[in-house]
Image (tube, rainbow, N blue to C red):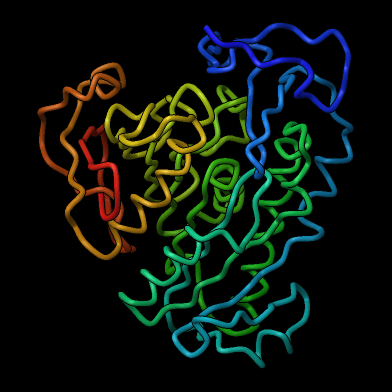
Length: 325
């Protein structure tokens, strides 16, 4: 069993020896987990460290909202909460559906997978795409401050969308929220009171989210779907949605040697599903059967862009290791 040297850490203080492959980690019970930053550097995260309460209230103050449409699919227009002119002078159209996409920890709105999902949506229909960039709250390298900021970041997004609709038209019945990792829980907090038509969680974050009242759940939208690709590690393994998909067992993905690779597979599967309906799951009796990838029940398609999609249950499927999977 491999361990990572304490020398790889930024701070020096009573560092425990923790397996580098997180084989020790039990969702909701373990104190420590190794997580990797954008440069691939390992960070030992203490999931019980005390975090300043200010993160719960200040999150969302620095949210950025970027609009993309078929008229400006390659050039964002910045929408500002409380600034009606920023909306009226944009290409936003309140008569069209609105798709909102956001990222997770130590990430931002420029991620390649966000562009893939954005372009797939725009190829399918003339819609408003809003990318939420909350990097200022998501970028804390110790993880827990970002976790604490999630509810207020989500509420701020919900307030912004209310302002957008009141200013230029639109309504929550025409909204599809999509978030990866911590971003899935951000979207849950945006939708919990307002109940958008649809919400897609892309491998919703696991550490500190089991039994968390602010976590994504099936009450956050009329229809909630989650795609679990690294459950029990970076992602949550529990079935938390109306429909939960567990591709290839939902924990380790084909072609992936690292947890971060498997964690990042969910956005790519979703992007692929928007352009083609080839990713089809089979219903499982429970999560254990899904984790074994031995499901043989009724068929149900993963993902897609249909605002009226409805369903229930746990589903497993097998995919390939590369696009379009």
